[in-house]
Image (cartoon, rainbow, N blue to C red; front, top):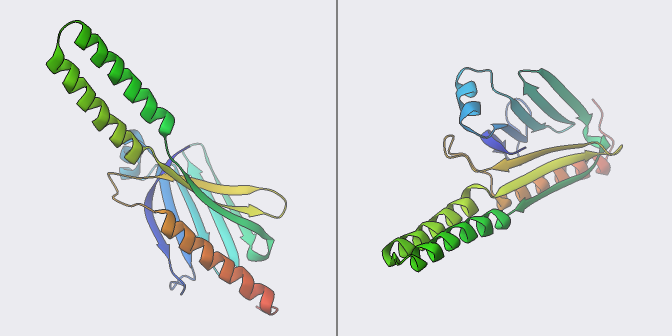
Length: 183
């Protein structure tokens, strides 16, 4: 399920609440945005402090909160996916329509359909591209967020931001392995 970022924070120094990383996202779409305005939207949170990873998933159907000690994190993963199948699909649809218009002797319409197909394909490439970040627990449970660009919130996390988050988490885990942490 694709999510859009409502807010996010990542820094090598923790905020006042102790969070190094804090990503809050909601489900994509206009209906989810309207629910967000009413404060009843499904919301997902990934928060990383010096000693914990907190994953929360809220929806109208329920609530789940997982608190992992940082020592139980086995891996962190991130990446992105480009929607090439959707781009190809729309290019084929508009190209076939343009070909039909050309055969029916409507060359201007054919040209406009080709141009519209290119515009739609570019928009799909921009807005359907998704990024993923997740943390895997030693027992194999995976807590991931699949994120995409939000036009409404104006927030976007790019590959560099995900790489930075990964570096922050690796540094925290490494600090835990350097010396015993006492409360």
